[in-house]
Amino acid sequence: MTDLAQWLAAQSVDSKLASVVASMAAASAEIAGVLRMAPVAGQVGLVGHTNVQGEEQKALDVISNDVVLKHLRENPDVSILVSEELEEPVELGTDGAYMIATDPLDGSSNLDVNVTVGTIFAVLNAADGLLQKGRAQLAAGYAAYGPATSLVLTFGQSVAVFTLDSAGDWILTTDNPRIPEASGEFAINTARERFWDAATKGYVAENVAGEHGAAGKRYNMRWVGSMVADIHRILMRGGIFLYPLDSETVSKGGRLRLLYEANPMAMLVEAAGGDATTGREKILDLQPTAIHQRVPVILGSADEVKRVEDWYAKG
Ligand code: AHM
Ligand code: MG
Image 1 (cartoon, rainbow, N blue to C red):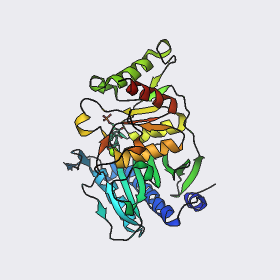
Image 2: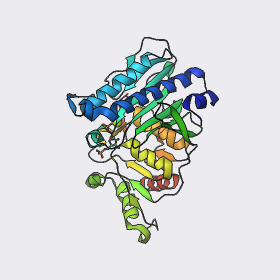
Image 3: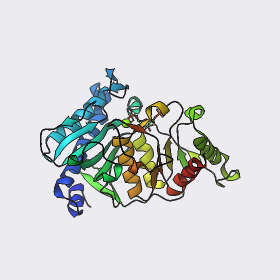
Image 4: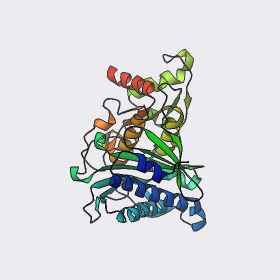
């Protein structure tokens, strides 16, 4: 068995970068423990105010953010934290070389119903400023708090999946999963169909038409409402996830955030052989303009992403 420390030591990356990833892994293991007992501890529900996104914060959003902050404060190699839950970047008072961008608890609308949620993060060079393209990310990962607690990591070459054991150690359980190029599964919130653009409508209509449509095969639809859970399924068995620009989200630029949702997921998906686009541009090539910027997100199996890009190229 290979544990996270052994795996990190075997990667050809700077030991300080590895230590930053280890800090996020430790934070995720602690969050997993908090979530497991949250209903008993009375930590489910809202805290009564909104975050910078204008969304209601849950107690567990705040607690998870605090856990990440605590672990990063213990690591002198991290100097800046950008978090979905914090309006401004936090300077940690070190001269550490690295910056973390994180959504400490993604999918928190699923918390009250005991459905998988996650922590998403990216590691970047602190010296290069807050607004770096996704291609500049040094590492990315997420933890998925489901029936098992998974940690998925990349330094850009391949992806590794770890599982939290009962002793609190991360054990390597799937090395180098590859996202199949072809898939018959798509994930989109179809309740938003009336807001969709022509490309999204066209692509989904082809899928729904199944073997009688232009795609020539039958599709299944899945939508957890937690990006981490939907992406984890796609990583392990293929598929495509779409949160496209639509007429309701257009003024905000999209629904999901570039720095700590789209970019780390795009890096993981590309490292596993998949693709990630807004429909018109690769997500990792976008130049961010603000730390909480939102973007359209379409990622997963390469053949499916290509079909969506082809629809966008038509109009
Ligand atoms: P959050 O960061 O506030 O949890 O929002 C992000 C989540 C994603 O995990 C998920 O894919 C999406 O919002 C679901 O959106 P919708 O409620 O429109 O289906
Ligand atoms: Mg989120």
